[in-house]
Length: 255
Image 1 (cartoon, rainbow, N blue to C red):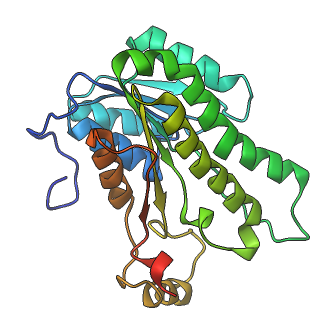
Image 2: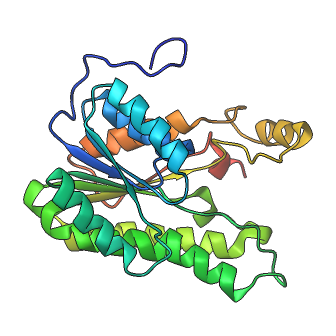
Image 3: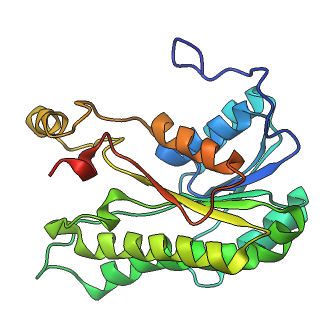
């Protein structure tokens, strides 16, 4: 990234010749991850759910970095979609070296107001889809000695009363990260990143944002690029597996 915040093609080609599948890659954190990998030479299979326009814009930005890019639409709420997505990417692009499970949803579900439908949707996208996508790609990841990075959440380690089911899905993903790392070693490394407040919710007011900054040890809100940087590290950390890096400005140590 340039000093102005614009992504530019550079001389860092550490991932040249590698193909990364990034789910939820059209916008926000997923977009930042796809751009960070492409900046370092990776080609990108860009998954999106419903954000076709955003996916097209992100794909154009990735191509401007010199990456070979294809977009793949899949509704990962569908139990059969992860296996189909894996097959489509391998058939179209020749394989996968890096899987980043970034697609997720976060619904406010206070106790007493949570519905079965909301519960099922969150578990389907946040926990079931990453596991079955990983499982479907195991043969090619083993062959290519690839890696998986799951985007978890600080909520997996804290108690957020209005987001209990969401936190449960992310705790499941943390355990999936650890279990898959053990099951797939030594050929495939599996790690995770657990972001804290790196992108504020759109309807947050100034007072809420100020309170968040004041109660964060590093006195700042992070960025999607902070998460992407952790993903890049884990993709090249050949002696790290089963680890989840918390990227939250120190909020998990504040008390």
